[in-house]
Length: 40
Image (tube, rainbow, N blue to C red; front, side, top):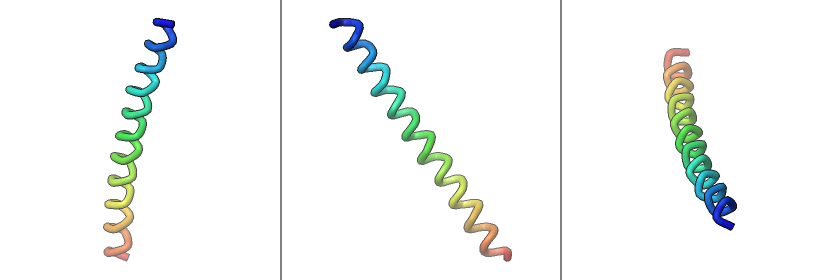
């Protein structure tokens, strides 16, 4: 039971890290795309 709870906590933290990374990458890409479309 305790092991399962630990896994759940770890997976939750990992999911939050993944979401943060995805948001960060999306912001970087959208900024790059905006710059490219402006110069084009």
